[in-house]
Every structure is written in structure tokens, then in C-alpha cells.
Length: 81
Image 1 (cartoon, helix red, strand yellow):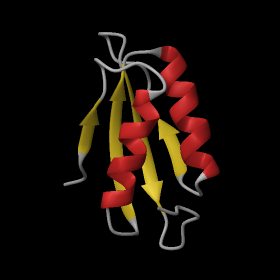
Image 2 (cartoon, rainbow, N blue to C red):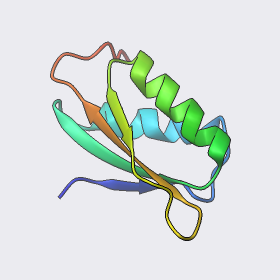
Image 3 (cartoon, rainbow, N blue to C red):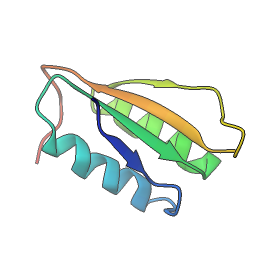
């Protein structure tokens, strides 16, 4: 099962910091699901993960207002430590 990172209590810029740490700890290729509440964080995490070479898709917003992003880390990624 792919990991789920619940960041509903976090705000930018910590949302992407936590996503980046989680992605760095996963072997490539990997999929990470990220649950966010802050609409600004959804956009920022999407843009930042895409810039790292990841593919990001978003599920429809949940009834509680949260969004879940699916981030796919490729075998060859531009991520550097």
C-alpha cells in the first residue's frame, strides 16, 4: 500500500517541506498520497513536486473539504539532497 501523508494541520511552506522529506525517503519509483486542507498548499505542493520531476494528480475534493494529491516519484528524478 502506498504511504499517506496527512498534512491537514500544516500550512505553507511546511507542507512542501514535509512532502519533500517524504519523497526523499522513498525509493524510486514510488507513489505518495498527500492529504491537504489548505487550498494554497494544494497548488504549491503540486507546482513544487512537478518541478522536481514528479507527476501529480488530484482527486476530487472530499466532503470534508480536504484534497488528496497522488504524487508519483519517477525512477529518474531531479531530486537532490
